[in-house]
Length: 260
Ligand SMILES: C[S@@+](CC[C@H](N)C(=O)[O-])C[C@H]1O[C@@H](n2cnc3c(N)ncnc32)[C@H](O)[C@@H]1O
Image (cartoon, rainbow, N blue to C red; front, side, top):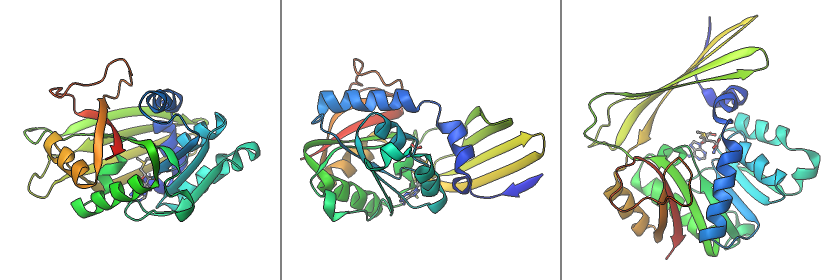
């Protein structure tokens, strides 16, 4: 078995697992956009990865800006764009902590950041800097939709998820483990294992990192300090008619944010 250590160096396997709900996610983002936002046509995806949502937005005739820290992920994003979509898409190599492209200041109608990517920002200062710079990119009335799991600090067992996907004839099995949260350090140890098997293939890509942790009080304080207010909350069932109430216990959260 061959071993590698960074799943973002292998965008095709990442997408085989996370690309399956893309149309449903874009449907929901656009519903939120119509209901809570401006309904306008400029979208922004911070940490857009291999570009599944960027391509989906362009396919639907929207203008979209994306950026990511990983060159292999961006290269995959560029490759997948059909020639007729390219004039609608701008991709940048940049970081969530500092992206502030001058040409789109105050121009973005809808920004979105799903699948817990926001939790890569590993300090309060980094998270606040990201929220503040994204707020400055939004048009008045524009919204930032942020989707990630809140942390239950009382949890006593690791969380595991398993998915299976395919790339051509190869099978991709993905196992993700979130260890116990370290409350004082505000982080959870994460591990992802992608095992790819096929006729001539047996590959294990094992990636380890920390995700920052938030309970609802911590995240509300952060949003306030970054000048953002929560317009609505949803869960990962993506139903506009079922917003979460203030007392909801759901940990999977989609926050619809707007500058104050
Ligand atoms: C879970 S993937 C999500 C990709 C894409 N948003 C999607 O929904 O498929 C996380 C992405 O975040 C990127 N990333 C991690 N830390 C980052 C940072 N500080 N700034 C920009 N991108 C970052 C990674 O390179 C990776 O492409």
